[in-house]
Amino acid sequence: MNFDYIIEGNTFVNHSFQQCCIGIEDEKIVSVKKILTGAKKKRFPKQVIFPAGIDIHVHFRDPGFPQKETFQTGSIAAAFGGISCVFDMPNTKPQTTNKNRILLKIEYANKKSVIDFGIYAGISDENLHLIDDFSLLVPGFKIFLGSSTNSLLFSQKNLSTLFKNLSDSSKPVLFHAEDSQCLQENKRKESHLSDHHNARPCTCESKSIQSILQYSPFPCPVHICHVSSIDALQILLKKKDIVSFGSTPHHCLLHIDKNISPHNQSLFKVNPPLRPLMHQTALFHALKEGNIPILESDHAPHTLMEKSGEFSEAPSGISGVETMYPLFLFLAYQQTISFSEIVSSVCERPARLLNLSKGFIKEGYDADFVVVDVKKQQKISSEFLHSNARYSPFEGFNALFPQHVYVRGQPVVEEGVLIAKPGNGEHVINNESGS
Image (cartoon, rainbow, N blue to C red; front, side):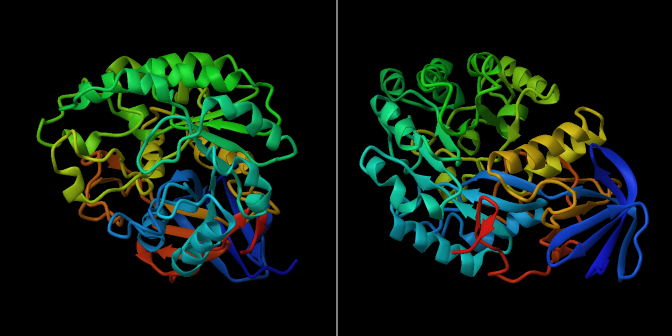
């Protein structure tokens, strides 16, 4: 067999570490064996090779808010975090709610992204009848049942029509699940994180999820985004055979009982909110036990100036596309959680949800992988992160960042240096690429 080249090293394959060779040809993995010969080899004798991550939930703010993020800055941040493919949410300016706006965002991303990408369509009450016009352009759909940053609201009364319109779709619909009426009833003046938690209580999340689950079994794949509470988790664990759901690094690792300085509380303001310790502990335990299918960053950057104002005026959102995979690779190295579960939740299950030929080091899949030196642990510092958001809620946390990142067999990061140019990324739609 002919190969473009061969990667050799200690590789995480089939949920175990194996010394093996990966044969790559035409951007694909064509062979994974103990020994391969006949082509140029790239050896990594002292490092570990993992599948590259997939982030199903980012807000790259492009177009409309370039001061917060662009596809160039966001994709570079993702690459340095070991992510080979991201999926961008619709609440940009303009919102991606029709064919022309989706094509516009694809054009922006095609010119700027250094990694592969997909663009979700936002579904609102107004464009519900237009799904067929743009469904072939997108890998999935996003619904906001509760208000969030620049979001487009969807009425729960229209859920039946939504699922009827998607009855022939194999593409997932992703939900921001907070009950709009519940949010209105709990609205209050906010001056710190506990106020924000009380203004968007756990009951708003669980009510919204119950409303969605009334329509199960679903005619199309359904994913509940950024689960934040024990209440929601307990409901979803009973339904995990019929619905996908995810949580974020910030909901699994941070909580409001921590002694967070009153001077930077707004840096931790996010929707749904950070919760008390009991919720964070339960979520992390569920992730550790394999009961949370997907880790998603919900990377939602704002400028440091925007986040540094009064708490009540500061926008909600936490950046995390660059730190998600490295944080959990370190925790796996420390044996706090298994490598198997991290690769499942960051690589494999996201690929299955969106029907991608990514997420696995396996024949026939895209040659997307990262190379990590487990002895090169470093503390997260906003000074070296690449997002336009010059802050991180994980400042000072230990992480394992990859030294090499490959997308479709091409180097994007080598020895910690960006190699790929803007425009390197490809538009991904359920196993097909194109625009």
